[in-house]
Image 1 (cartoon, rainbow, N blue to C red):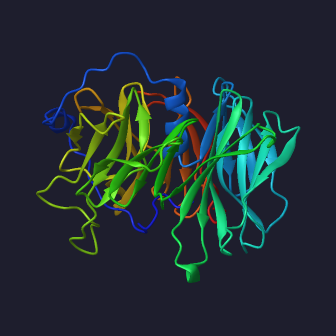
Image 2: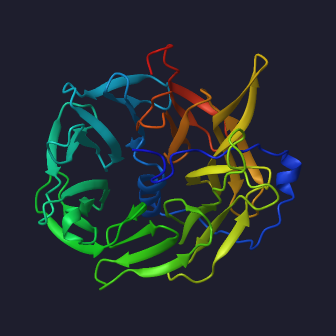
Amino acid sequence: MPPRRGRGRLVACVLGAVAVVGALALLVVHVFMGGPTSREVSMTNASIGYGCTATVSGIDYYWDPADRRLMRADPDDGQSAEVMRLDDDGEYVRRIDAGSDDVFVLVSRYDGSEPDELRRVSADGSDVTGIYRAEEDPSGGYGMIRQANEFDGMLFVAVEMRPNDATGSPARLEVWRMKPDGGERELLASVECDPDGLAMGPDSLYYTDGQQVFAYEYDDAAPRLLYASAWDYLSPPAPHRGRVYFMESYDKPIDGVTGYRVTGKLVGRITSVAPDGSDIQSFDIPQDSEPLELIALADGTAYLQMRTAASEGGTDGVSYGVIAGFSLSDGSLASSVELPPAFGNPRATDAGGHLVVAMMSNDSVGAAYGAYALGYDGTVLRTYEGLPADGEA
């Protein structure tokens, strides 16, 4: 799925010197004790990871859209092997999500002739089974599966129900609980909302809608507003260490060449709130930087996709594949790495000890332009999938 909903173009940035970044003025400094819970890691991976990669039982998985196959990679030796393949040219994969022992692959059809299907794939690919199909909305609209996540042996599936436009009915989000094989289905929640970003847990969820962040307990009558932003863009929400994080940024063009950088103003910040919406804390992203997306939270660090000016062989260009890590405790630059190619969009999940990064294209989930195991310090540990040959992407 596209990296941003309703935002079709990327903003530009130039990373400043480490000394400048280290001099950032924090709005608030928060001292963390302990790490994120496994539940928070799963929710955050499914949210800001965009379903591009997954880690199950220590093995990393990514989708290879060029050859239409799910790959598993051993982070120790970097060897990749095919797990499953799509043989129907009318199908495509929208995302992959991690279960306790399996990978859940969300498959859609280009022509929309059939509802989304969630398929359960065993770790070695020996068993591939369709376990759930999105149902049609009673008004004649359709249901779109947003994500799946497994907690304590039960699978939770979020489905966005889009009503027939002629009815004027609002969109709503349904949360279903079921066995990992699709059995014993139970509708836990149905709430009127049109979420841009979503972090779903077993008893509650967080979502962004426009410039607002909401929390919703499945037993509550209605969602609660956690935060209202005055910025142009909010990233999907990311639960981490007892707080909810998101990135805020501007999207205001200044010319048609260098992009959308706002000179002389803050261009972005990382903000977090307590689960009840109190204790708002933020730190600014350097003014000479343009954040594109919050892609991971791990090891006390917020990892952001940045866009930088680049020059190769005397030709000026732009790189979208810069990943900059900023300390959550003081906002300083902790790491920075540029991954090839210049036109890829990195998306990451926390594998526990490293990040799994897929370099996706603007319109494709998965490793369209490479997949990597990336250390928390920005070191490329393994290259699972390199750049495609010219003309193959």
